[in-house]
Length: 243
Ligand code: ADP
Image (cartoon, rainbow, N blue to C red; front, side, top):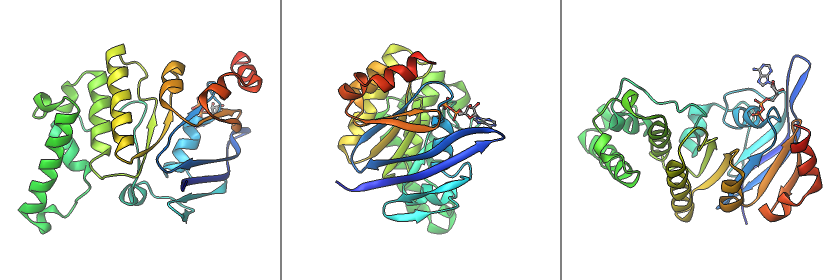
């Protein structure tokens, strides 16, 4: 197994609160790894540091064998590390297709010429078809439902052909059919070689989809392993009961 993401001693305080405290874990290439934990256990803060949205106080990060200290989200994106947000971040005033094309990150399409533009458009249309969004391609993204916005963002982060996708609560607030849809897309992309790190509150989904599961409590990993072992781990039960 190859480690795609290595997190070592990651720490971040806000005033007196240690949101993430000496946190270390690995994401193996090809896995669907879950990061779970009670509310306030540091999952979002860890995500934000890993993806370059927040500087760490200390600790080290390594992606695909290369350390990165002051990560820049755009640079990481180009290297194949991308993410979604709890509240999907898409451009409401652009069409659904334009959102995907923008996410390809080819700022120089004008210079690269019409062939590159056609390739981005073809890839966008292929993804929209996969995600059942073809009929919405020309709609403004603002007109999508909450769940469809999440799907659109998921499709958009795949435009850059990432190696690692971090999903921040992909099924929060979506209906049961959309939960199944999200699950199916994660499985399909994972089979195609994309690695996932997922923050998710839907435990049945985590148990079905993810392996390994890393559990944070007060900013520290307290357990990591197979879903069945995690479910039976008394430290994990304590952490959730104490919530
Ligand atoms: P989780 O995602 O697991 O719910 P968070 O990473 O959001 O946890 O929060 C971890 C802790 O850090 C919480 O105590 C939270 O209140 C605190 N925290 C997070 N972000 C900030 C911030 N920007 N300013 C102050 N405190 C914060």
